[in-house]
Amino acid sequence: MRLFVKLLINSLALWLTTLIVAGVHVVPFAPGGTLEIVLTYLLVAAIFGIVNAIVGNFIRIVAFPIYILTLGLISLIVNGLLLLLAAWLSSLFGFGLSVDSFWWGVLGALVLGLISWLIGILLRPIIGSKNGR
Image 1 (cartoon, rainbow, N blue to C red):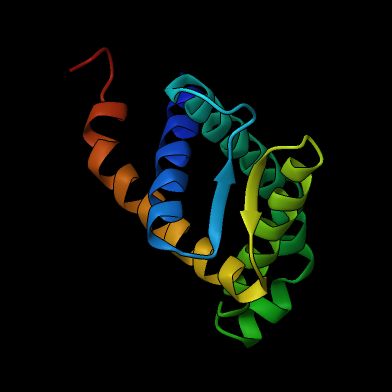
Image 2: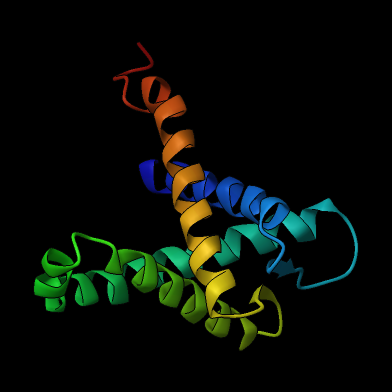
């Protein structure tokens, strides 16, 4: 259940990011209605989550000394690269995330992270409660 909620949070954050950041777009898999657009955002959020979980964690472990030397600022670059990787992977399917350049990817990753964090804080009382209490 938590995985599905995180997927929904990331999808919503991705949608808001595409509205805020001009260089980040999502191309739906079929022209048409709202269902296709929502499914596209869910699929792109799943791809980004998988990329972030597998590749992102590996990079964070390997580059730990660089994170310390740069006081964590390298994470902006790494997250931008992960967003570009997710865009490339989703484009292999013929739809999905489109990032115009590296710096749009960095800005998009920063905005996506902030929005996900804010939504997570707002939903924490609902998600974190046991048995709906």
